[in-house]
Image (cartoon, rainbow, N blue to C red; front, side, top):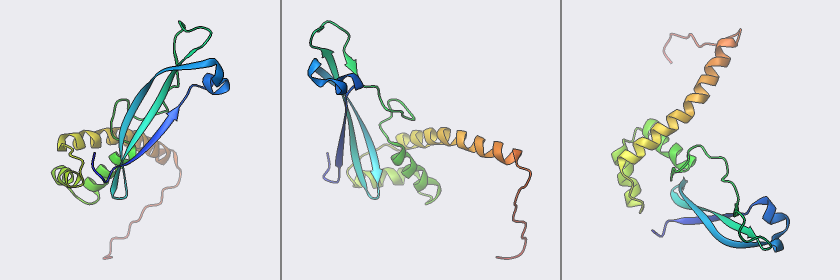
Length: 152
């Protein structure tokens, strides 16, 4: 991995294990990695969820901490990286191929199709917010609109 990567690791254990750790034995782990982008650098986020069985019942089903709430399962990009791609595209008017070139220069080769898919995913997330804003707007009895037609 490139030198610009910063890593962050979070370890999640099931609540049962945290309540009485001496009664459990670790038998494995599940790791999920995501790519995040913050102010000019990429960051690798590792989420490690330990698998545990009770010492007094080793044949029982292993316990594992649930995944935290997430906007999209199996997506390697965090919402922060997706927001960066959307901001670059629609606020800074950078096409996906240019963003892909920039990310490659920073040591993270991403295909422009991947960036396009992430932007589409972000649009789906934002659609729910848009619908909620429209709903409240339609229910409002007062709408403030700028009707100025002169030069600004």
